[in-house]
Length: 122
Image (cartoon, rainbow, N blue to C red; front, top):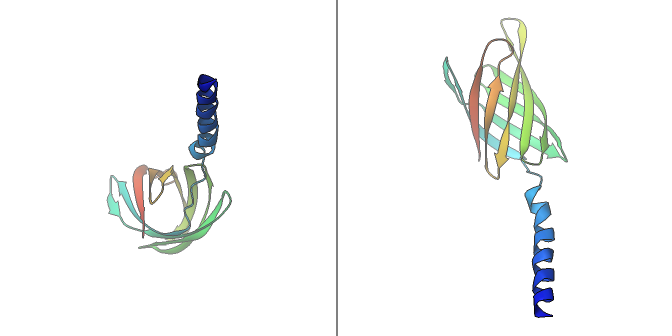
């Protein structure tokens, strides 16, 4: 009987931990990024708002401010920023993972190259 109780207890603990494995990250807040490319390092910031899986906000960088659109699914984050440079729009796509107050991943600058990025919540 005590073995059955023990097995039921272990099963209960395992079932209760499943939601923790798939918990939704919350990225609402201000983030300081470090973006590494072959051309050097940039340090933009993000002011993000999250509603469920939808992500919005503002990107603040040396080429000005821009709207952020994206998604957060579990710990995976994807967002885009459109920057205007020399009268042309350039879409920058970020993808990565979130770990509480840090995140990191890869960034694609359209057909102009790629890099890596990391972020820390203020």
